[in-house]
Image (cartoon, rainbow, N blue to C red; front, side, top):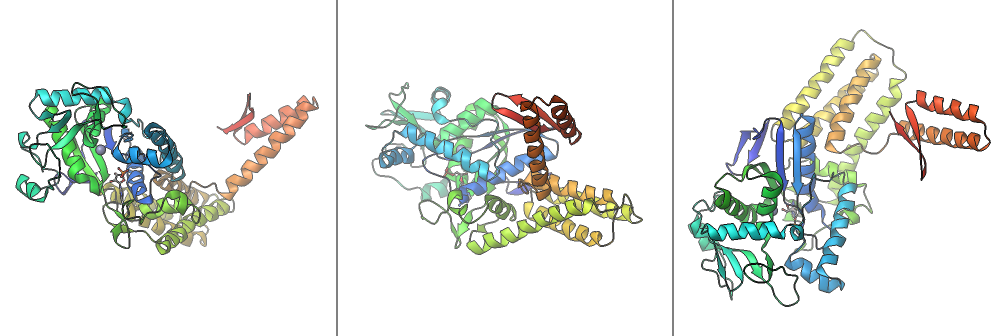
Length: 465
Ligand code: AMP
Ligand code: ZN
C-alpha cells in the first residue's frame, strides 16, 4: 500500500511500526459550534481510511481528540449564556449525532483536553527541563531556536518563517515564531493550577501529549485538514520530537479543502453549510458519497449541483443492489458462461484494491464499482448462474459498506423486516391466549428465517443469526 507523506512530499510504501497494526491520530474538532461539511470532509476521510485499513486486514487503533478549551469556546459561552464547559459538552454531543448521520464511526478513543491537563503540564515541564521551553510571567513558550528541525514538515526554512511571522503587539516571547505551550489565565476564563501559576494549555500541546499518552512516542499516521500543516502540526512535531528524541509520526496525511466557489469553506468566511442544513435537502449519505468521489488530497468544490449529481450516482448504486436482489430469485443455478463472468467480477475486485492501495484513491475506487455495476447489469440479460450475481452482490455490498455507503435498507430487507414484525405480533397474541403450540410454531418459523427472539424488559427483541 502506498500513502502520500507530507513529510517527504512523496508517495511512499506504507509500513507500520508493528506489522499488521496501525496507530493513527487525527486532529478533531474545536467544540464551539456545529461542525460544517468542510470539517466533515476531514473526519470522513480518516473514518473511511480506517475502514479500508481494516478491510485490508490491519488492526487499527484510532484516536481523535476534542479541543474543549479554547478562546472560541469561551466567546461562544458568553454568546449562548452558558459556561465554557456547557458549550463544549453541548457540541461534543452534537458532534456524535452529526458524525453518526454521516456514517462516521466513533474513534477508539476521543480524548478531551480538559481530561488530560496533568499529562499536558508534565509534558511542558519536561520541555522546560530539557531547555526547549521557557517561562515568562506565567506563560510558557516553546523556544523554536532550540529545535534545529523546525520547518521540516511544512518545508520552510527558519529564515522564511521569520520573514513571514507577524509580531503581535504585547507579545513577550523571545522570538516571533515561539509558540505558547501554557497561557496565563485571564479574568473570567477557565484555568488550572500549574507550576507557572493558574492558566490553560496552548492549542498545539494537547495533540502531542494525548497522542503520546494513548498511542506512544512514535505513531504510524497523523492527520488533519491541510490547514493544520502549519503551524499546528509543525509545532506538534517540534514539541514531541524535542521531548522524546524519537520520530513523532512516520506518515503525515493532509486532506484537501472543501471549497465553496473555490474558497475554503470556513466559519470565518461565513460560506459554510452544516450537515444539519444539508440534511434538509439531501440524505447525508449523499454528502459522504460526494466527498469520497474525489481523491482526498484534491480540492473539492461544494455546490448544490455537485450534490445533486452525487445523489444520482448514489441512486444508481442503490438501484443496482435492488435490481440484483430481485434477479437473484429468478436465475438458474448455473450457466455456461459462469466461469468467464466470475473471472471478470474478480478482476473488478482486484482492481478496486489496486486503486485504493494507491494512496487511498476513493475516486478511482468508486469508478471501479460503477464499472462493475455496468458490466454485471449487462450480464443480467444473458441469464448468468445465481452464483455470479451472488458474488457481484457480495463485492458491491462489502466495498460500499467499507466506504460507509448503501447503508439504507433494501426494499427486500424492509419487507422481510415487516414480515418478521408481523409474526412476532401474532406470537404475542398467541401467548396472551395461552395458545403455546402456535406461539412455539411461530418461534420455529422465525428460527428457520434465521431470526432469534429475546425477551427483554423493554419487550421482545429480535436479531439475525
Ligand atoms: P477545527 O474544528 O477548525 O479545528 O477543524 C476540524 C478539522 O477540520 C481540522 O482537521 C481542519 O483541518 C479540518 N477542516 C477545516 N475546514 C476544512 C475544509 N474547508 N476542508 C477540509 N477540512 C477542513
Ligand atoms: Zn492536533
